[in-house]
Each structure stands twice: as C-alpha cells, then as structure tokens.
Amino acid sequence: MAQLKHGVGARSWLDGPLFTLFIAALMGNLSLSLDIILPVMPQVAADYAMDDPTRVRILLTVFVLTFGLGQMGVGILSDRYGRRPILGAAIGLYALASVLCALAPTFEMLVIGRGLQGLAAAGPRVIAVAIVRDRMSGAAMAKALSTAAMIFMLAPIVAPFLGEVTASFAGWRAVFVLLTVLALPVLAAVLMALPETCPPDNRTRIEFSVITANLATMARSRQTVGNIAVSTLIYGAMFGFVGLAPFIYRDIYGVASGFSAIFATFGLGIVGSAFINSRAVMRFGPAHMQRVALIFLTTVSTIFLGLTQIMAIPLWLFHLLILAIMAAKGMVYSNTNTLAVDPHTRFAGLASSVVGGMAMLGSAVIAQLTGVFYDGDYSLVAKCYAVMGALATLISVLCNRALNETAGEH
Image (cartoon, rainbow, N blue to C red):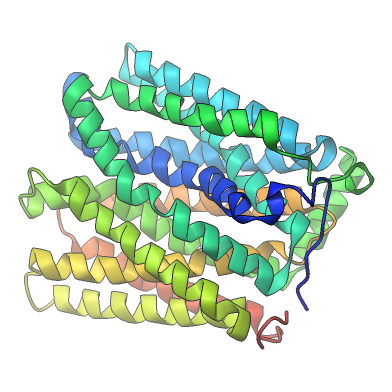
C-alpha cells in the first residue's frame, strides 16, 4: 500500500496545497520554456535572415537534448548533497542562460544559450520528482503528480500567449527576459522556504561502484526500462509535432494570427486528462491508467492516419484529433514516471535522472528525425503518433503486466 514517507521538514508547508503548487511550478518549467518561443520562431528566423526558416526548430531540439543530458547528472548530485542546494544552483543557471539568450548577437549564440537553458532546466524537473518520491510512493505518488500536472499544464496554455504578447510589445528577445523574471520567485522559494526532503542518513555517496550498482539495479528492472521506452516514444512524437506546429498551422492552414489561442487548447485537454487521472488512479492503479491512455492515443492516431489517406483534413478536424492525442499524452505522463521511478526508493534522485534523461535524449532524436522527413504534409504527424503509440502500448503491456493494478496497490 502506498504511504507517505516523511522527510526533513515534513510538518511544514510541504504537507499542504502549497507543496502541489511548488512542484507544479518546478515541473511546468519545461513546457513554459518550450512553448513560449513557438509564436516567435518565425520572427527569430527573420531577424537572423535564415535561408531556411524551419531550421529555427533547432532551438527546440537543442533544449530537449541538453535537458536530457542534464538530467543524467543532477539526480546523482541531489542524492549526495540534498535536493535544496542543487535545485537552487540549477534555477540560478537557468536565469543566467535566459539572459544570454536575450542578448545573443548571432543565431549560433542563441542556440548555445538555449542549450544552457535546457541543461539547467533539468534540475527542477528531476528534483521535483525526487522530492515527491521522498515523501510518497505508488498510487499516492501518481495522484500527487497528476494533481500537480493540472496546474503545471497551464504552462502550455498561457505560454504561447505570453510569448506572442511580449514579442508584440518588445520583440522576441523580451521573451527570454520574461523567462528570467519568472524564474526568480521560484529561486527565492527554494532558498528561503524549502526544507530538505532527503535526510543525511539517506544520502548516496558519489562513488563509481555505488552508481554502477544502482544503475545495474535499474537496468534489471523490466518495469523501469519499459516505462523509459514508453516515455521516449510518446515524448518523441509530441516534440516532433510541437516543432512543426507553427509551420503546419501557418503554411498549410493559413493561420496567420491566433496560433497562441489554438495551441492553448492543447493544454486544456492535458489538464482535463490529468484531473481524471488524479481521481481514477487511486482506484485502478497507474499501470491500468497508463494502458488505457495509450490504447486511446493509438486508436485516435490510427483513425487520423486513415483519414489522411482518403481526404484533405480540414482545420477543425485536424485540431480536434491532435487535441485528443494531447489529452491522452497528459494521462500517460504522470503514470509512466511513477512506474519507472517507484521501484527505486534508495536512490530516487538518480532514478529520476536516468528516467527523465534517457526519455528526453531519445525523444530529441525522434523529434529531429520527424522534422527531417517533413515535406509540408501533415500526414507525417499522424504516422508518427500511430507508430509510436502502437509500440508504446505493446511495451506497456509487457513491462507492467506483473503489477497488481488494484486501487492503491502496486
């Protein structure tokens, strides 16, 4: 049975709703950093006089890639030195990298800045999951992450609006200034109010033998390895679409304005599915909820692909199909992370690092390949989601079948 695991400062605000809000703020950093620049990508390409405007997608790919690389190390550091100091350092670096992006004189320098942003953003993502795992497990952990998701998934709703409005008044560089400003309150909360949730007696030494032993334990876990693969496939398909979305809506459907409002509805779908998951996961368990979401995603994607072969998909139908797929992705997220990290209580930071890092690295490759094969035909999006969804569903069934999926048990 899942139960709370109280750490240092357990009787503080970490026992109330502010804890959920704090975790949401940490985990929403990824969506905000990615989606806020989507409306201004054409402006960035024009400002740097790029011959191929779609090449600006590298700003998304490099962020996801370094985000994955950063996760591989930050968990080890937080297991050794505690969550609080590593989290504070990561947020500080993120703010500095955002300033570098705002001042970048060349596109190459902007790419470097985005790489540093992704590297630093890994800290909040990994440590947020580790903090939750420090305090709870199983279905309770999945419920906590789902509840946080209902809040942090507001990021893809408001991010495009923030980017579009900010750029309209002060140019695209001001978007990165805004990211700097938004990071400061979270940094202040970490430095001034966050108690340490990883007590000294639960710290893991940074020794090669210890790390390799822990990695070997993870590698032997079918549940962990399988759910990393599921996360990689679904995130890869999603990031592939996100990088192409501004060009699909503008070039194929002629959406010259209002992209932010259209994209925001995806976030509403994800919030809705996260709400359903937060209520249902305690009864049915994370493995069952994950499988239901994957089957739904694959079914919708296959229908989408079939329709592309027989008709020209109108804008309203294209958007409705993507909305349904995104909603399913929202339900996949918290359950997959829970299933992958949950078996590794003693080194939750390292586990969160490896799970998140491997998934982001793999998804960055998938997303970049998706962009390479894009030739102005939106059917590529349907093909990618259908294939990735089918593979993820098969892997989910195989790697989670040993779990007891009754409510609250794991």
